[in-house]
Length: 173
Ligand SMILES: *[C@@H]1O[C@H](CO)[C@@H](O)[C@H](O)[C@H]1NC(C)=O
Image 1: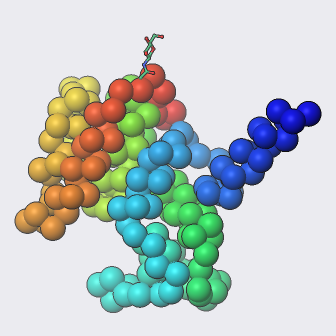
Image 2: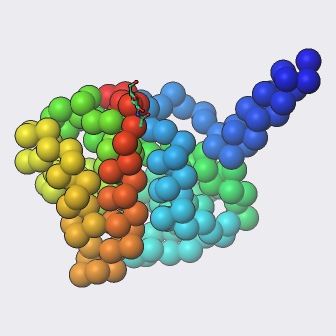
Image 3: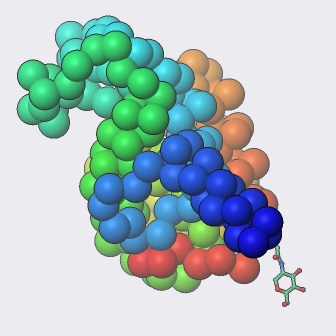
C-alpha cells in the first residue's frame, strides 16, 4: 500500500511537470526539458521579430491562438503548449531520411534544432548526414552549425552534448 502511494505520487509529479495532451511520436521528457530550458520561460507575452510570444517560445501569432491564452501563464501551461508545438517539428524530423534509425537523444537534439531553425533548416543542414546515417557526425557538428555568428553557440553546444549521450531508446519515428 505504501509502495503504490509512493509510485502514484511520483507519476503525479511527472504529469504536473510535463503535461501531455497529444500523443507524441517519441520525444523523451529529457529532450522536452532541454528545449524548455534553452527557450527560457516567460509567463507574460513578449515579442520576437514582431511576433507575440509566451511561455517556452510559443509563437501565438503563428499558431493563431493569442486570444485563447490568458497571461500570466503557469509553467505547467507553458509546458503543455511547448509539447503541442514540438509535435509539428517532430513530424519534420521524422520525415528526414533514415529518421527511424536515430536514437532518442539524437532525435531530441534534432527536434530542438528544428524548433529553433525551422523545418527547412533541419532539412537543409542535415539531409546529407541523414542520407548517410552519419548520426554521430550530426552530434559532433551541432555545436558549430547555424550559430548565427556565435549567438546560438551555447544552445548548439547543449544540443550536441544531449545528442551524443548514449541511449538504447529509439526515435519512435
Ligand atoms: C544498452 O543496452 C546494452 C545491452 O543491454 C547495455 O549493456 C547498455 O548499458 C545500454 N546502454 C544504455 C545507455 O542504456
